[in-house]
Length: 64
Image (cartoon, rainbow, N blue to C red; front, side, top):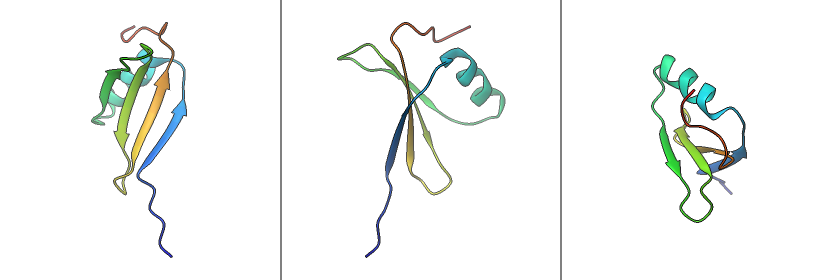
């Protein structure tokens, strides 16, 4: 049986620094605000095409 991972979600901290690091590295990402909770989310595709979600608290600032 072949299993495929298509989405992995993790809690994270330091939203502004993570966004700065990804931008400096030339890594494309999608920054969203979760409508129901107000939490921030960064979505990145890994090398195999799986979607990686980093979830940040509502209180985090999107820019430093």
